[in-house]
Amino acid sequence: MLAICIMSCDKMDENGLLDGNWQMTEWRTTNGNTVVATNHTLRLYYTVKLNLLKFQIFGAESTYVLAYFNHTNDSLIVTQAFARPYDDNLPLDSLAIYGCPADGRFRINRLNHNTLVLQSQDAILSFRKY
Image (cartoon, rainbow, N blue to C red; front, side, top):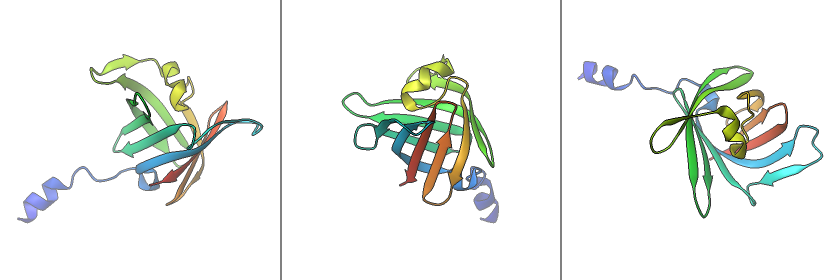
């Protein structure tokens, strides 16, 4: 019985506080002068599990993309993205509608149990955990 429990637990969270479901609450330009979107105008969600990041927009035509990423204490770097449902490779610059920069690089400004703030060269994305 112990062997079964040990073998079934090999897919544990590996990203600490980053793992989970995140709802975008505000998307601002980096200079802070312009609000691009809020959770009332764009239903944007990021889901982090293992080595995958899911970008998802809910709406009339819900869309999502899966991506591989690297994570350190102060950065999140999207490395490869896939279109669903056929897993076609996507260029990172096609993820702009999800707030992802063309180089895939985010700085993690804040990360705790409730809040995630990501900054790219052009935008600051604030999220709440749900």
